[in-house]
Image (cartoon, rainbow, N blue to C red):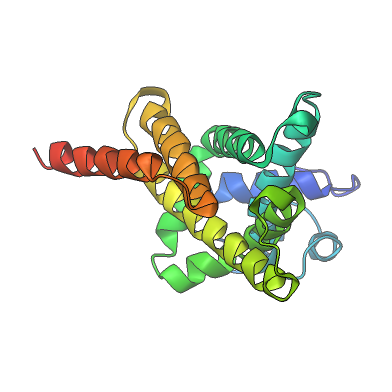
Length: 220
């Protein structure tokens, strides 16, 4: 526990919240109970977060921020094209999630209501869409200026849906070192970029075969 005469950091609060969810299998009833259980002042919580829901949202954004920070430490990353930046993001992001897998699976299991889970991921969604916009290159933009904003929003939303599907796949992946998730990431990102290029759909077909095989063998 944090001594009362010691200030508690944002990271400390996040760590204590994650530990409590994992140990008790449920979320704290209130900020008051959470602060009292962990021996710090309620006011210290409000210095960083407005509500427990706000804290939950921030945890997923912190996963995103940690991912981007790791990416920027790689000097070669800045030289990658959009597709390879996206692949790098996915592989790094899911390494961060895997390091916190018990919490992610537990907290998404507690709220079985999909709308509540989406609300919990709202800051992640916001940050991820900004990231997609930042790495979007002219190679994937259409030339008609009036349609560029619409196209950009479509790409952002499509990328977000793809990320949600990948999280779902990862949650259900029982392979060693989550190697099936790595395969899924590569095939789904390849497929999405094929579609953006309106190129031959080899990767999309490849993804379809992979998913079909997974469904067939998982039923046996």
